[in-house]
Image (cartoon, rainbow, N blue to C red):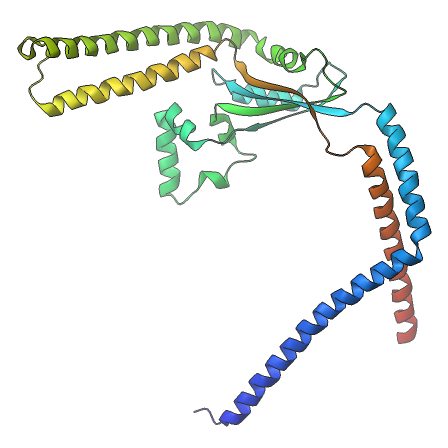
Length: 307
C-alpha cells in the first residue's frame, strides 16, 4: 500500500513543475544574454569587423578577377551492356588528361520502377529483399546495387568555362573506346534490331487476326471461342507494344556503351564568388579566435580561484 498522503504527492508535483518552468526560463534567458553579449562584442570590435569585411572584399575581388571560376558540366548517361562497374572504376581510378578538369563524380539516378521493368530478375531480387525485411532505399550509397540502375548522373568540374562544349563528349569518348564494349555494342545492337522485327511481326499477326474477325468471325485463322480469349489477345498486343517501345528507346541509346542523354554545360559550381566568401571566412576566423581567447581566460580564472 502507498502510505504517502495525497497532499504531499500534489505538493511534489507542483514543485517539479515550478522547477521545470524555472529551468525553461533560465534556458531562454541564457539565449537572450548570449545574443546581447554577442551584439555588445560586435559593437566593441566594430572597427576590426569593418576592416576585415573591407579587406576580405578587396582580396575576394582580386581573386575573382585572377583565379579561374569553377564550372560543372552535367549529363544523365544511359549505361548499356553491363558497363556500369567499368564506368565507376574508370572514374575512380582514371585521372583526366585535360588539365582543366578538376574532379569527376557520378551517382545513380534511383528509379525502382525502371529497375524492375528492365529485368524480371531484378523484380524477384527486390521481392526477396522485401520479404526479408530489407529496404533497398537503405542500401544505396557505396553498395553494389548501384550497378543495377540504367541511368546515372555524371558531373565534370572544370576550371573556367568550356567554350566549345566538348568536355563531356571528350571525356565519354575515352570511356567508350574500350575494345571489349565496342565489339559488344555491335552484337547487342544487332540483337535488339532483330528483337524489334520479331515484335513487329507478332503485332502484325495479332492485327491480322482482329481484321479477319471483323470481316467474318467464322474465318478467323486463330480459334477464338470466347470473349476472354479475345481479351487475352488484346492484352498480349498491349504488352508487345510496350516492349517494342522500350526496345526502340534502348536502341536509340545503344550507339555506345555509355550514352549521354541530356548534357548541361557551364553551370556555376559555386553560388557565391570570393568577394562574398572571403569576408565571411575572415569573420569566422576572427570570432573563433576571440571565443578561444575568452574561453581560455575564463577557464584560467576559474582554475586560479579553485586553487
